[in-house]
Length: 267
Image (cartoon, rainbow, N blue to C red; front, side, top):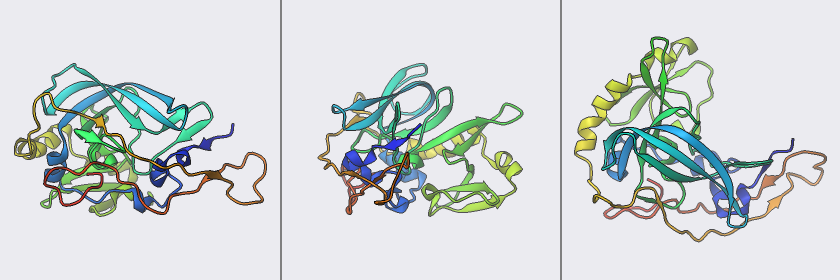
């Protein structure tokens, strides 16, 4: 089956998997900064992931249906359901992916830092603001990044310290943070428990910027994106060889500036 990328059909191609990954990845962010950008922080279970064409069709979007298992910051309560729209996904033989954007799986639980408004992705720092909860052999929930690294601790600089199995390629999304190489079978046991992770976050979230009750959460802001064309990878492409995307030369702004912030980009 031919799998085609449609990321280039919109300016989101600037963040597509075919572009240089370092361009799309956000800078490292201390927990205090992530907490300040987040309107709300939840532990959620993903109940549904449904992708569809948008704009008749120009791009693929995914509707994520989330059940809040524990609110860590914000006004929502346990058991509330929330629908969040994220760019990218798969529809039939077509796929659109954003570099450094998390991919959510139904039935799994995550801790997510949710922006009040966004242009490109609804979580703070894209994958930096999403942590997956994975049960170990004893049933204890442990905290992992969406790239499969263990979150060992929150360092004195507020950045997560990660554990990664030997010989595992370093994901671009973890650039700029401390990574400890460990045997592959020891990664899970080096991960913080969910309870320890919450305890580390509690004072940070308590002192973070409070957004107005009833204010926007994960509200998309219309952005002016320009389309780029799908082109062949080379003139000799034959058969079912996949097309590549002609990427924009300039990065696309990825979030509205926050009041008081010194720069615009995706927080």
